[in-house]
Length: 138
Image (cartoon, rainbow, N blue to C red; front, side):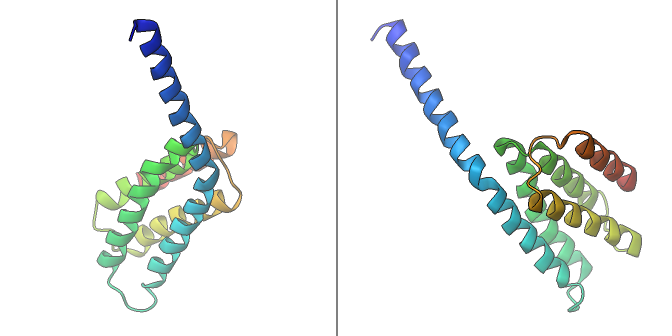
């Protein structure tokens, strides 16, 4: 097989991979909404007496997945919010009421982004969200 044929085979494989990612991108919003529902269910554990540390551990696990998946499917704002949430939880024990509220704010924002299907970076709104989260998590 010559170089030209190898290049065409490689190009065809890349095109197939891109098509597969595009197909998954269309269904990613559904997965995001499932992840947000899981986050909200975990969060409700606080009202049922689940230890804050356990809730934070579970929230971190899901937000880590959200962070990793969002950008891959064209939801860069979701990745930014997930990264902020992961970093914030990882940087401390997060036991005070203010710290718990900051974690909850991340979850509510992810819910809003998913429900409104805000893809990409979210434009000016996305920039404001990221800036606000950065200010909250400092």
